[in-house]
Length: 306
Image (cartoon, rainbow, N blue to C red; front, top):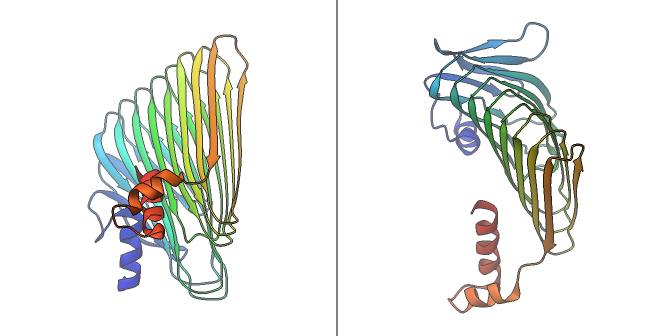
């Protein structure tokens, strides 16, 4: 890889070099490098573009890296990745895509990820989206995530997109079995004329299943965001959705948290708040010597990254 590609890989997946263990690196629509272990196998699909990631039963404290980088214009990449997580396992997965486009042609990556999570298994999944390059061509990312969780499994998802992506549509659909727990944290920044749509749909079918979806977003310039969450309680279960947005300039945020209690034992809560940065916060930071723009940037960074 050249220096540009290495820098993009580091931003997407915190990788300075090709990692040890299980990994799959995709560059400009093609496989760049891949590694498997005795505990985690990554293999190419036979009938379509994408991979199968197979984690054996009882695997503990292992990481998997599957980043995608694109550094050319005019590419339309589509992959189907299936994760088979064995019972009683515990793994950390780093994914995401970085696009550097300096051309007048759109660069597009669409990833369809399906997680089949076994009994008592634990998964932490981190997905980062980055767009850069001064070309007029789009930097477009459209991830779809399908999640199937068996008894007492736990999944934690952290998605981050902090500017640069011209257009994105993110869809996440999950079905939870008995005692399964899903946590989702979305951090999103749009600027200029960028657009972002997020749709979470969670079916709480199992007894004592639970989900928490938290979205923190900032819209600047003339950007446009849409957030839709649809939590369906079909058993004795708990669901909580929180959507907080900061609106600046001429941007727009549309938030639609939906809850559907299809069982009398379901306990579902939603919260949504959209507003501007509080003036007293700006003034407090400016009295410490920051300019208004510096104070604003600090507040936004703290809001999105904690």
